[in-house]
Length: 490
Image 1 (cartoon, rainbow, N blue to C red):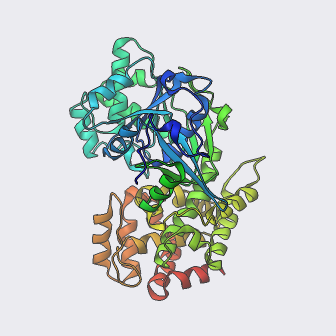
Image 2: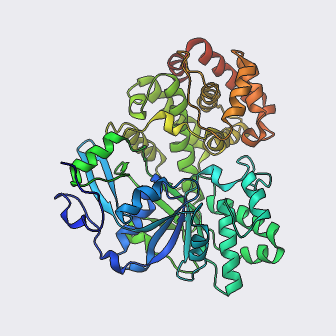
Image 3: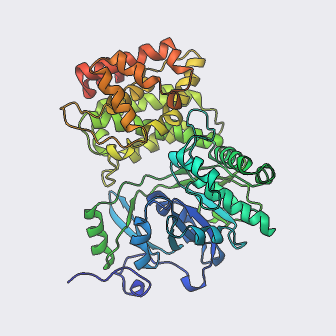
């Protein structure tokens, strides 16, 4: 006998031990629209909001999928409810989240979504659209005016496809109606994500209309730093959650106990009391963001590429190899931490906490998943640290291995000759470069480093960077990832 589907009707009959929403969902009204409602948002911000709705029910979330309707299709029959399953060595702990009132598919409900964003009740529009969703040049942080979606949205401003286009059209409608702007809160892993969002949105607005561009300058774009590891949900996860809660959940979210959210406190139109749910409200989020990008995300990417090449499917498996542990400990301690200026923050303790989180055997975080969209992530996670160290005349041995492993990975051919499913906006371009280069590490380096949208104009001409990466790339081709990691880590 199969379990019933999770929904408002079955909520009261869920298995004992399942934590339920501590408020009457019927009293909750929308105050936030979230663009890009993927797994990370549902494991992070939506949980913080869920913690606050009992004391202030005016901050419910309406989510919007900008590309695919799969989240809407999963959550609509469940009345927006879903399970977050927190995993640690002691087991899996289920909790049902009710903060998402509904999910819209922007492709079929664009006008309805824009009308909601223009509603005065919506005071915050938040985003997790990934790096590529900003339609920007990752190397410069500027709006990519040649991006197909931006070209479309400038020609058809009232029927936008992109996140910047959606934001500007909704703001234009509020301006026309005399409604104050909403706050735009980016929750993506971008350096100075609020500043990046503002630069992109105001530029797009100015391209549409000079007066609108000036008005958009008054919009608040607080930066945030977000942190929680959220692996992809598998069918085995769905089966486990179904057994735990006594109901079928089409898309439960699996995550770790740790969660962190640092938020710049700039919300002219009001905000939920995020600090009551454990968020850190600060005047400047940039130091925390840089710490996370360079220590956690830089380490993650390095482990993802070198670990996948070494035959490891999960991060916890990578951390079972002493050479990889030594490499990552050294990357954080010797190369990333010296670039961070954070008085009062114990970076060594943060490093040790990260290493412990990476070891969590209950968290099935796939190296392949972390390896996605590397051309968009590399500038923030590794190249910024490399630039700072080169400028200071310091070594980049371990960081350069992360870059070399990415270059080897995007050839699309694993060490055993099997095909790598490279998921990246530039995948075809990179694999064409790799095909031309063959097994020549220097030719591969020259081809990939010529992608200015990733490496800018400076790094391709830096002799130290070139020598370090080509040296590691040669070793990766000749000796394989595990041997290369062992040598670099020693």
